[in-house]
Image (cartoon, rainbow, N blue to C red; front, side, top):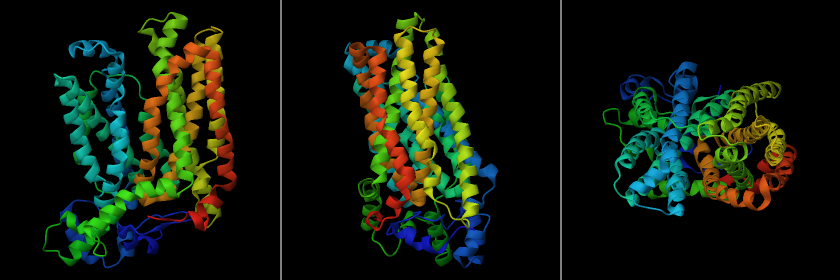
Length: 489
């Protein structure tokens, strides 16, 4: 059973140190449907009885849990398709807007990342003040509206503004997802769930019906999604017990011990505190920024590289992404179950206790495979080997990326639990900035050094992170539990 005492109303105030394993698995619950709450809440007089209730999120059926997780995972995939579907027609779009600037054309494609940068700083705190649905519901509506406006825009400025709004809504799904996993899944089942959420990482292909699909998922969300954030659910329950004849309002979510202003200040400062006061988080941000940047270099150049090196037609150049797709899919659905089984086995040997560091061993292998994959890919291109050989190199690079990226996500969720949205959001800000800027250097790099030495340079830049991964395995727990680094968030 989840440990209750340390996380009940302390979580609600926001004044909670984040030590050793940060939050133990939390306390509260309930389904957001008010009639059911009113029928059962008065009969339950203690937090423990609430935790034992079938309405406690971690006690929901696996079917219900995975329906929510799969919905968010597929939402990430389809929203990524919607955001990138127009890229093959960018030339025609620029003609419609009477623009001939290559810089503006590139900006049109990448500007939605600005929403990725701003979103986590706003949406993560809101999800920890008012619950996950306070972010997800507006995000679904905002994305659909922004997508529709982009489709009917008559001015370039209008198109660019709503592309930013599109990115802002998209990052809401990515930020809230890990928090929901922490809310509803026990620690030894989070790996597969986070892997499902990360499926959108590999999306590159476009789909002309993706907008219709996203509308379908929005409708599905109305029936499937439910509030999972335990602090909010406990506040609802307490408000109903104390004022059962009053309707629920958002004011009940702010604890009596804090003013509204103080509660907001604490929530919006939290991502910054996590980033600047935890030595691990900025290192993870730099590492995952490098991973995303490198993979986006491949996404940005693979098609044109194969057209130039192997005389592929634009239609055939889609085969160049086959290696990345295979590497991503293989790793996504292997590492999650492996990580869960490892945590379950080690927890059984330690009286049910667990450590976030148990998620990290694949990081060492991943940090080795990433530079190896780029060396393989680069020199295979340089030597004009058969076209399948560079693609096999991208398989290695993709596996290395996911073996590095996913353990970081697992670690952040296990370590920060109720504040997983703020932790992953803090990392996401830096990652989004680097992901937008670094790939712009890819073509100049290859023009100057060639594919062989250009990718060799990228590989050597990535090599120091092997030492970082080894350091985490050897000293990560000592750093995390050191009194100097305990956060008051």
